Length: 133
Image (cartoon, rainbow, N blue to C red; front, side, top):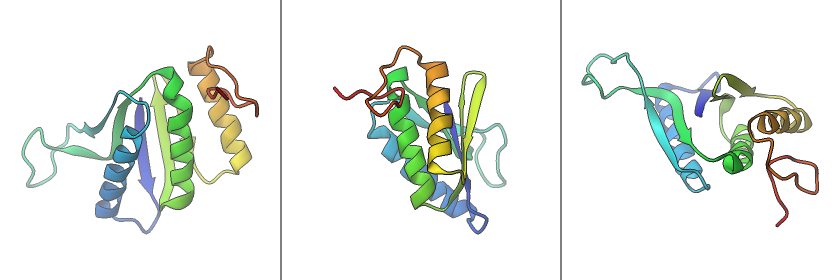
C-alpha cells in the first residue's frame, strides 16, 4: 500500500518532508509490518544517485486487519495537520481523502476496506474492519 500526502496550499517542501516523517512514525505505532519512505527514480540536483526519496510518499506493508487503524490515523491527520489530500493506493484501487464531511469519508473508507478485506468483522457502529472484542 502507498500513502501520498499533499500539503496545504501554503506548505513548502521542508514542511511536507517533516509531516511525512512524522506520519511514518505514527504509522509504525500501529499494527503494521513496515513503513518506508518511498524512493524515486529522479535524483534532485546535488543528491547522490539512489538517495532520492519521493516527497510525501510512504510504502506501508500491513495485514488487512490493520486497514481500519491506518485509515483512522489518516482521517485524524486530515483534521489536525496542514494536509490538503491523502491518497491511498492498494493494488489497482485508490482512494483520496480530502475535505469531505466526516460521514462521507467514513462511508468511502468503509467501502474501500470492505473491498480489500471482506472477511473483517463489523463493529457495533457498523464500521467494517473493527471489532468490539
